[in-house]
Image (cartoon, rainbow, N blue to C red; front, side, top):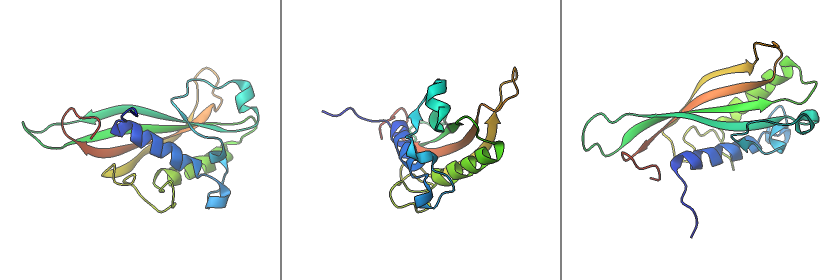
Length: 162
């Protein structure tokens, strides 16, 4: 029997598939989608980043609010982030283009490329929150970039699988 997937995991899987479309052959400006995005990567080695840029998908806080007892569906706001870990020699200008490609991919259907902020009906909406460089204070060197956004969806209270 297959392991059931939460809505949260299904959103992550769809996002990873959407990021894989980031290729110039699909109308994007870069080919960073050729290397599959990872689910919650914690560290890449210098060897892994020597020749290619890597992406990681990070799901942060899921805020759910039940307004009244016996509410049938409650809204969730899930904060997600796509982190871009760049290959050696990548310029800030190139990273900005990669961030633009990620922003476009987030709302592009994984099979057709059509604009879809609902992840095929899993969500109500997807909204941008911020994009920035990842800059450690100690070095002030650009370690990567991050594009953050929220995905809004509905579930029964305490039902992550609906």
